[in-house]
Image (cartoon, rainbow, N blue to C red):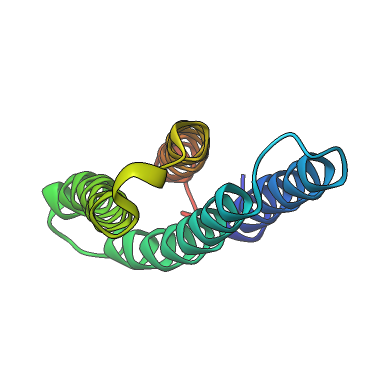
Length: 131
């Protein structure tokens, strides 16, 4: 696997998430505010995943072998706590009108992006040329 191929996988996840959000809007499966939350979470996670992927990819050239593992784990934690903080702010702002399906689907998006990123990074770490 190459770094470009991994980034295309992130773009593919983003594309399918947008298509599903538009389909949910078309068939009125979720409220408009829930769709907005879901679209915002998708764009946020996509951008954060790309940034953290590139940052971790640069750590592979570090002579310290633990640097890449630290970068993978810190990226995982940054993404998790960023989404948790965004969810908390959404809950505090919306109070009683919180959309639980939007929060649940945002968590599913987090898992998809995290699995794709970690899988790609571990495959790149195993390769001889490091992407």
